[in-house]
Image (cartoon, rainbow, N blue to C red):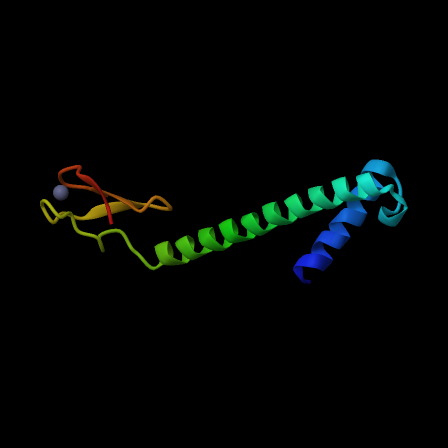
Length: 99
Ligand SMILES: [Zn+2]
């Protein structure tokens, strides 16, 4: 579904939900208002998709790493990794660093 179809569908949905009417039966000013809202929803929807894809990529990356794989730059002890944040904590000296 492309950009315009998505907004079109959303605008029709909003018109029905909020005014209980077909989008094309709404007066011009309400059509514009509903259309703008549908457009804003589209951008939220796209932003959510990007966030979700980003989270999945991070998770994929993380699952390949096993504790102990990252070594402390100060004492070269084994580090435990926190998921998502890319923060490692040295088990030996407690140093926290980004990896
Ligand atoms: Zn250390």
